[in-house]
Length: 352
Length: 111
Image (cartoon, rainbow over all chains, first blue to last red; front, side, top):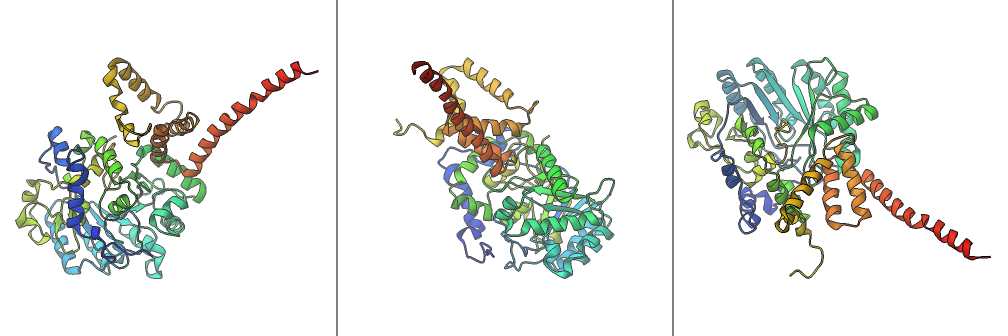
């Protein structure tokens, strides 16, 4: 199995190097406008939040997969993991604030030893919706995870899972040998307990992200294709397909550079800048929390170690919604990934 | 002046073609945009047709553009290669079917 950039001590494992790379080159001498300059053209510089709705918590970077495009640089060799104490601090915020959705991500969030306890405690706070971003294969990775579909069902968790294509070859090239087969099996297990079934309140959504240096196509069309093919070939049903653009950071940035696709990809993202997508940017209604409890505008900024602007309120222990609502969102050239074409967010396209 | 006839970087300058003739370029791009809209054929079907035609007319810009576009529209490699074979088959067939003309002529000339 591949190792993370961090384990390989790769140059791009350093966030400073990534930010420097994204700030120079074609954005310095190649005539491409920086993201801030593009925001300015549509009157959104500085970028401000709307209303906080989603609390996205990254409970650790450990994962059973090493996907080629992973912006987290996750893998089995990553040991960063959220403690129960930090989870407790997150729970306090959920109890005291109006948070609509708690979105748990990783790594494979299920690999955090306190994952189940955390889900149970989150449910007690009364938040409207709990999302788990599951990579699917974790369900089959070890007998101790086989009952996850029942656990998700018991707590009414919404499951959002990555499946880059409805066929094995493209999926396995991106996510690892055998991932497609296990993912199909896991989806069938989720379907069997009621997930994704018509009329069921158990939601199962899939995430499509391009398996290479190109942008996602129209979400509705791809959703139709996925629904038709997965049902025809495997009897699988699901609710929605979210298309997510690969952002040029971490392992996907490494891939772009190594395959000589970087400049062309950035050109494409910049050319596809859509002011309408700025309106629905997820960083405007989301706060992302890392395994140590630090706060970020989104999971991508988290991976670049770009904390939220207000210095006194960068940790969950000093969470202040009023201050955060007034903040300026930290942006960089990677943000072009979320404003290209129909837009991109953890909930898929942002422009109809 | 560049030393080669084709430069991949020229593809993104296609939009500047109006510099030497604005009205016709505008009409072309409006029509082009309309042609590729979802209609009785899906946008994906149109992309595969474009990919096939790109090979038939052997336009390297179009091959670049519609290889990417087909991937973005959710096509897989197998579908894209089948589309190229359709173009190749029509091109090959177009040559071969003229063999009938050759046969006609030979038969007319021969005893």
